Image 1 (cartoon, helix red, strand yellow):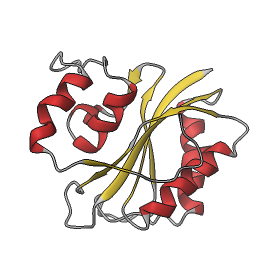
Image 2: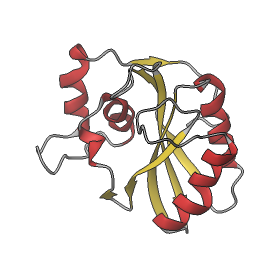
Image 3: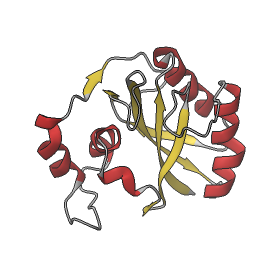
Image 4: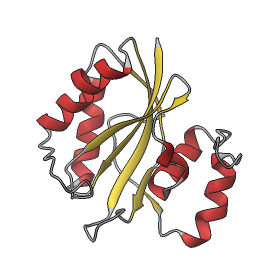
Length: 160
């Protein structure tokens, strides 16, 4: 069984799209949701678009990373109207990305952006940045005074 950490984000109707994405994941027979972070509201990176809501989620699945991306995550994004454009910072109805797969960090932005740092600091506070040798809990505390990120209450179909 593979343990995977995902980030789910949206800045187009996020109050309904994030719960819907989690429901799609819940309905899958080939994965199990283990735990989730709080939902965080953050400013977009590289764009003047609306704020994002983001949540980190831990799942277990027998699928490998490629199968998970192509057979599950991309399928959910497409069902939910995700439009891909040349602008990788364009607004989106839903975005589901693998950040950690079986203890291997896939997205090293994890230690760079508040939309990843704050939710993942809740799930993996002791995870060390291989580049800076600082854990996520310490990193989150150190950037907190400079970040506009805030927790928001969102009714989710799953809670830990």
